[in-house]
Image (tube, rainbow, N blue to C red):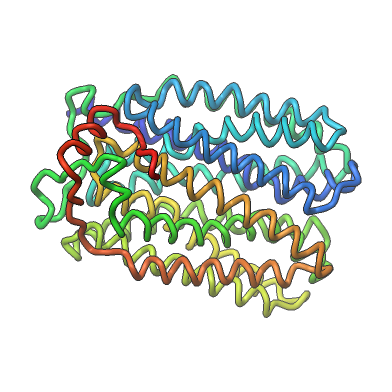
Length: 438
């Protein structure tokens, strides 16, 4: 048991480092795009298009990463992520051409980051279930806000010197990501069933019997899967627009200087360091009290985007001298962030089982991340270019959060195994691939 606990801690550490690097890419873009635009003479929509391309490549890569995790664990995926994340940052630091930017940041960084999300969420869900999943994932996911805080503080002295310092920042971060993800790969573990171990955590009494492991075909024949996907997708529309454009909202709409806006942005990360493990504990206690894990995860997925929507409303009400209100918005966004992404994975895992979860969640991520982040990030820049400020962009994010909460309301509390004809079930269980109809 001691060895098993030690192994599970390594799983969380590996996922923590993966989240640190993944969200290091995401969170730094909001700040780096300002000096990049000044230095290269590119518009916000051009820069956002490169970010959107990165997220589309990320989405496609995520599905294949999930298949590898089901078969071989996270180690090969994290190693590949280390190489491509490094290439994405280092190569982009030398570019002057917009099309090279689309390739280096869009393709290299997209492949690298695509190796990290599904692998980290899937490994945590395979090792921790029931009343232990959210706590473990909350600790691992804390790597995201820690990256936001540390990397923002790291960037500020460089960017304060001159606009072209973004190149130095990217070059350094590329090698930092290479080192951290190499460590992540070294401590990563195979799946518990490959080691003859059971996942940690107690399932509610109603679910104590062994759950059915849904194949990709079975999962995607359920309302639960599609409601979970659309809840996640609409949340990502709002989330990625806010992450990529909030600094510009403050600097353009409220005429805030970049230093103050960057400090405000750090508040989201600082709060996230605490909200992620704490709200993870709250979610696990909710699982215990409800006696039904899918039902408890559903409640969390309703509450999360509502909090994000309130943050958007307060952001629109904020005046230039109301820094306290901006800080409150950041706290609310941090609370949303703590529960939504991992909550969607947790709901899917509680319903569809662990055996094929990498493929199931990988395909769901492909759909969500191919559309949500790319669209949200691009629309943030596009609406600002069209209107001259970022008010319409924040309203767009608000609508995304509201639609996410509505889709979460439609999530079922339990799911019956879909009835497929025997020949189809045998084929998909043997091939474990996605049906062409999907």
